[in-house]
Image (tube, rainbow, N blue to C red):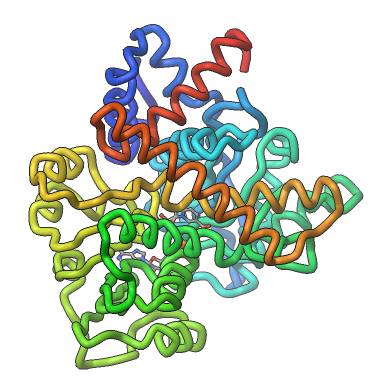
Amino acid sequence: MKSLYAGPVFEMAREQFHVIADHLGIPQDDRDRLLYPKRAIVVSCPIHMDDGRQRVFVGYRVQHHLTLGPAKGGTRFAANVDIGEIAALAIWMSWKCALADLPYGGGKGGVAVDPHALSMRELENLSRRYMQEMIPFVGPRVDVMAPDMGTNEQVMAWFMDTYSMYQGITVPEIVTGKPVGTGGTLGRREATGHGVAFLSFRALEALDINPVGATAIVQGFGNVGTHAALGLAARGVKLVGVSDHTVAYHDPRGLEVRALVDHVEKNGVLLGWSNEAVIDPRSLLEQPCDVLAPCAVERVIDADVARRLNCRVIAEGANGPTTPEADRVLAERNDGIFVIPDILCNAGGVVVSYFEWVQDLQQYFWSKEEVMDRLERALDRSWSMVVARAKRDGVSNRTAAMAIGVERVRKAKQARGLFP
Ligand code: NAD
């Protein structure tokens, strides 16, 4: 099938899917239906800039399937976003939601813009305009957005407000990841990173490594990376490396996580924190550590990097950080690097987004203890299923996780028919 999604990230999602489809023996005629998105929307978002000019930004939204419920997924603001990347991210959301047994299909959206280059007012204009353009295609039962790279709670508040103004009533359940106090849930901000740390501890346990004194490297120090680092440090893991898009630091004696977080809160980026610990970002991932947590962008662990890795656990906080070629290298290395695949490792975000949506629909809010307790139980369920399946079938954790997700979506499609 000729595809408008062609590009390296979509190709990666496609290749991963075919590995699973081969493993599950899915016939060819069923594959296109499972893989290709139900809908893709491309919009122009014209806004007024502070200097009086008009500029047009291109926005995307992909709804992979609606078989199990509304599409669910984040909105990414990044300069190089394109429709293929968004489609791949939507597909991964589908397998992730199905693995966590949530009543959702996969969705993802984005705007091709560098959010750091916008003023606050321009960012608000763009966020509101993007949601305005999406109004005909989204809804609490159709497609529920959330934050992703380059967007945050404030952007979600603008999305919710724009949709609500159009409806004439407050509709908090249209997006998740909103500020607490406007329909957001306690625990959503830290949910993804907390889940990354929580599952890293499960993996360390499985490898018989004591977290106290174990070491970690975290790539990406935004929402996911900071909370992963804080969660790891809370149980005695020493952060020896960290990076964002501006700089990378490495110090085998350990980096002070709280001080790094304070620096980023004040300055927006890691740059300027230290001159001594600076390291070439390309070599950061290859430094020795127990837990390597890529929490930034796709395809950072390719075959070359995979050959040089020096870690025991890869905790995939980001979506799609490891390429299929790297997966093959890791399998060949045969030295037991334990991979916690993205659709399991970073599922804490969508699990708590689901909790937020449920609370909004019921207008009944839970305590933070309740949220975190339910989150950990949900992650534990998925973890046990994936580990058991990998062992039973003699396959990688990624194959096991994706097989569970793909199977669930396929079963629902088979039971329902061709429509959804
Ligand atoms: P964010 O915008 O809050 O932070 C992104 C971080 O990555 C920033 O520190 C940025 O400087 C850094 N970064 C960007 N490019 C980099 C590069 N080439 N090298 C090193 N660092 C780089 O985004 P986020 O919400 O933390 O999302 C990070 C990843 O986690 C994305 O892949 C996203 O899809 C995934 N994810 C996020 C959530 C969530 O709840 N936010 C949930 C699941 C998955």
